[in-house]
Image (cartoon, rainbow, N blue to C red; front, side, top):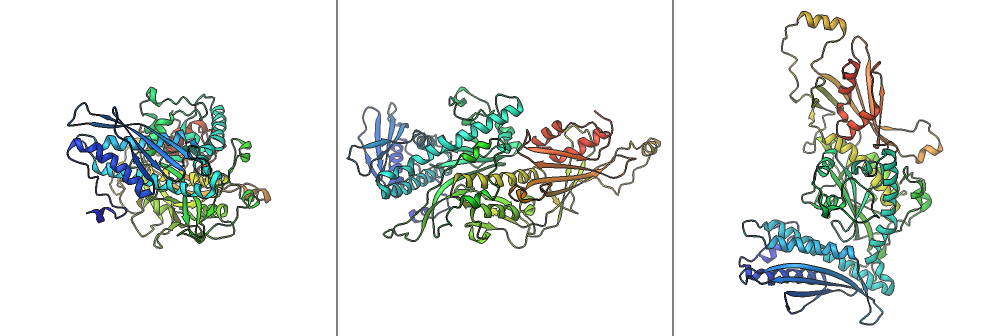
Length: 589
């Protein structure tokens, strides 16, 4: 059984003792076992006055865990976490020379340990042994990651503490100040004191969230309209209100954001990335700031001074006496939480944009690891709307029905772009500017992905509950008069949908480093007796108040508000725009 439990990727559930009196010793032993497997030494003090301290130590890192023990009921004692305290031993100093660790790291470890302890002490009928095993596995992974940093720090002597405190400095000195400045600009554009989280993510750079799912830094990249709405409806308590003034003033409290981003399984429509250190076979080419400046990424439309913010992410080769000699420790953006989730579906053109950022002199094959879609699929859109079928139909259809029945159903007919797709799992990064640039590209792709996922699509020709055109319906005199007047209401409105790229209006030298923006174009018939088509385009545009721009060609005489249409897109009703335009064109309110 022990050998079976060593198999990776398989969760058999936690072996929680059935006798409640044994859980305290077993639980503390679990923590010691995880630490030992990670390469740490452990020391357990005797239990005194309801306390027990367990010390875990590496060469640099020291972790003190203060457990509380309530034995008021001898048959069912209760274990709790009072505090977790990290400290760093100065490598070349005296035995008593230590430096206080990260308060954020302390809280991160205490949260995971506390959640695990509470789970295993639930009543037997409420226990989730699979969840307990998952939490235990995560804690073991965190300890192994910290010991990797411990090993790197020990090699560098006195200067090695940056492997531990670098994340806190990066967040406090670079990432959070830019997020605050960008949020202030968004708030100013909206004439508001708080910033809607979904608009912030559309217009600003990815939201930094230190110590979210790993003892490093994560980024919230994108939220679907439904995911944002669920956050907005989460009840807010006094505990959720963050006292920190160094964070952007978002309409969703940070504790709620973090709770959503760390929930398991990951909520649909939530895209995040984590900056992790990994050991890989070959180093990248040296970072060339000149080449990076030519890419046009990252862009800073909200805060031009943001271009001055940057930080190089250190890379270090394994020494000759290391078992992994010849490999390099470098930073990666991981979109899978260590392989727990599927990567982000990317189009080929956006993968090439990332390639030019990360490895401008190489090819896609040089970026590891990127999972390429199977040969049988023809487009990245197929990976979104038809992931289980190996054949691309070329077109998909969907029926959009107005929630208020204000217009006839829209028959959406999506033409699939002739462009292959990829699954982006993780990508190397050498600087924070590279991280921002990569996440800019990924965010724009996520905007398209989540719009498509918000609807049910079927390969063209398959039944999607469309009205049956074959049924004979007896026409009335009113119908005939409506035809002559051009006021007849169709059974459905056909809408052709295309996904394209908005190129610069003037192609010159400056336009080559201008980011190309994604655009969704919809064409629908003009109202009778006018002939022709109404073209509605929605372009991703972070310079606009909601991060998108709506443009309409046609719809003569319709009283349309671009602000209202952009708000409808923000709330997930992008494909309903032709119906709104049809209503206005027919003179209805």
